[in-house]
Image (cartoon, rainbow, N blue to C red; front, side, top):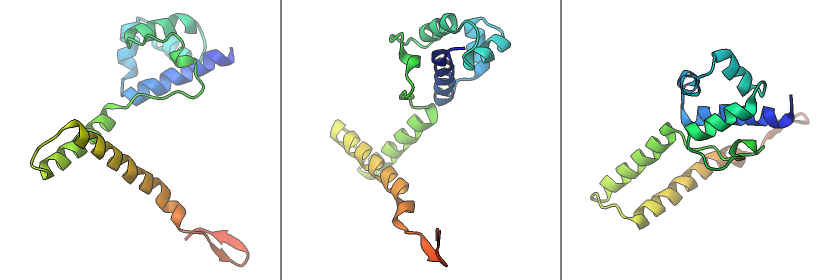
Length: 136
């Protein structure tokens, strides 16, 4: 089994998880058995044929989309809904007026808040006890 086939299978698994797509739905659409599908996700079997079907199924134009070691995954349905709910709440607080500048400002604000959440644990330095470093 080649390294490329393993990368393709892993990326497709991550893609399906990110999109929130059930494996059974994909199996039905591709017209393959469960065993063949799960071997495909491991990078085994006729990966090229199944990859081509996946690209068509999800209307992906780039034939090398799943070949990258580091690929940008699409936003899942929950992430999109969370982002929209945040915008709706903020818009209602602003008398319901939403324009492109408002949307962009809220997007930047939300990313800033997420950055703070990521960096917050790093703001507390570890405490030393008897020569050992321990987190607070």
